[in-house]
Image 1 (cartoon, helix red, strand yellow):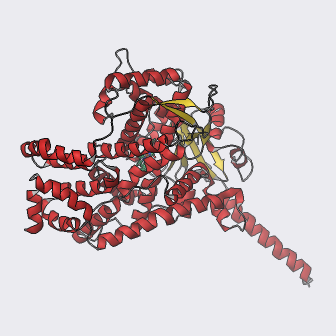
Image 2 (tube, helix red, strand yellow):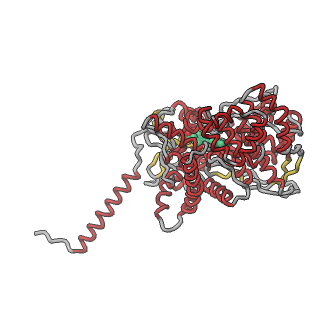
Image 3 (cartoon, rainbow, N blue to C red):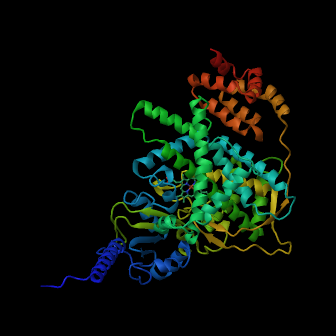
Length: 602
Ligand code: HEM
């Protein structure tokens, strides 16, 4: 008869079973799922289980890609603990994935921020399939209704620029790091659309929010590190500072999206006018729900989209402006050419407007070149929904593709001398702008940037107005320049630097409000009588071109674009507010709003 194992033997057997089970579980999780596929080559040998993870952890995601590409070419694979990542470089291959293979790889993979915010698959940035389609279409409709791509928004941007000027003047020519100032000004433009208000440069609430945003962008772990963020969240200590980073990301939601949506919902319930993206979204949701029960718009997506528009609409534009100023510091001859062009084409007696853009081609080329050189969004990720073949390789389902946008913007075969900052590359012999398809700062295809028109307007107005009035000089009077050093995270930004500004021109002040009213009474009344109601919108914008009234301008615009039958209710609410009485008085005095006035009483 066989001897019954003693208790020590049983314990060891149990330990062996547990270790074996855990080992099998780890192996099944980490074992490559791409075996049997003809995947693109690896740049370096992979190690057992962890694959290329150790090599990957040595530098930033971007630096790794640059190094590995030198070894493996334009399409290569990485095994990150069993997960396949394919890195794609060069314009043609990027276009193949983003445009021709759109149906196979349409979405972004789960990223650390969407994971910790519980926004996986929701909102415009992380939405998938029909959810994303509906969020994107809604975003474009609402952004356009708030003037994206139209002059009304250009005036709002100009207004924000004037406040920026006042803030900069406070430094009286002393060296200053303008990053936060630019951040606040640019953010105010998207904020005035999405939450219907702007914030003061000195408002501690908003300054803190900008710091949260900067931290969230600059310390963001790459997409490939999502599983480690998941683990870090459960640990009692702060592994790699991930928990601090999470606090900043969560603060954006709890201090921005959540409270503003709550406030807007209360206003909406009280029947207030549609003065922000949020209230317009709520109204669209109400209308769609009334018509059919299958509307895809919902509160969860709204929260995620508001955060998405806020972060995407702030950091990208302000980092581009920050780059452009640094690059012009390094190239005073380009600074001179831009200034000369503005002096000749616009002069110094009035502000630059969007109508001047066609004549400011060198400036336009300098902005394009800044976008190319800076490559602010260098990597874009995609998740493969269905396997496909590309350049003779198999790209299996569930692969994460990293599109190296920087490679298109810095391809020596396309640009010749990509590391030189040279706006002339975008101008032909006659000084006309050249469109180069490899310039893809806003992405390509259906998922490309929906804020492109707004961003281009912001860049043009800020850069033209800055160069019209200032000359930037290095902090160090001896002329030593701040280094051009790229810091990689979600965006490629320069190291912080300080500049001194020298005023080159002072524009005449805007006429004070009373004289504008006088102007209204005389000339405009006639113009409006001749050209009809639409002109009124312009006149009222003009009257309201005062910083304190910027929000009211939006409301005013909203009234004017609202169909007549809805005016009655809107105007009744608006007429009760004190600011409105000023506009109403002027408008009624000059006989402009007879029709509108009647509808409130009729
Ligand atoms: C210079 C400024 C900007 C640059 C360089 C930029 C660049 C980009 C890029 C490269 C993408 C990703 C495209 C893709 O994955 O294929 C993107 C997406 C996006 N951008 Fe921008 N962007 C800028 C300004 C803005 C502004 C002002 C807004 C605000 C309206 C905005 C909102 C968005 C949104 C919501 C997405 C996600 C779109 C989607 O997934 O459908 N961006 N942007």
